[in-house]
Image (cartoon, rainbow, N blue to C red; front, top):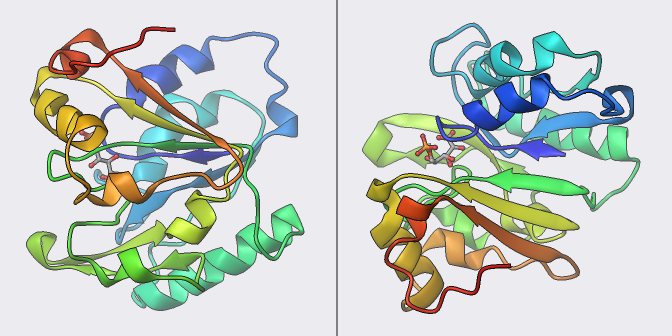
Length: 202
Ligand code: 6PG
């Protein structure tokens, strides 16, 4: 499974860490994206997941070696890691978590990014102008090959982008996540779902 970053998943990770009966040793954890920082950096997605969950369970962790000053090399190394662990040239991850930025980005695929058009590489290292930094991110070919892709989105500040992504025109990177042979699930809290007009609750 691939974990999303940012702040939203921390509460879920902390809850998961209290769960008993989860076959942790059967799970291989990857990341859908990472910041170009060392693993102990406050902005590290790995650090957050490790503090909230992974350091509390015995499992298999495959983090992005984002301390590598060469972000492109970190990306291609990670692609090899995913292929080696899954033993698949086009890996089909069982579960992929994604977040949603207020600009409609997901993983580290930002609006206008050349990564949106990537068809070969499974992991890329785009330079994100607005953040003045590189990011390392799974690309759409890998994300859209997932068996279950779950957007985890919370908070009133996301309500407008959630409405636009789910009910508006196609113009956001998050809308390019369409699993080819898998399911797409949106897990929203009430405030994030507040502006949806066509809400079908399960
Ligand atoms: C990251 C993410 C990114 C995140 C969204 C939402 O590394 O920042 O993976 O795609 O999911 O930016 O972030 P929040 O949950 O903090 O709103």
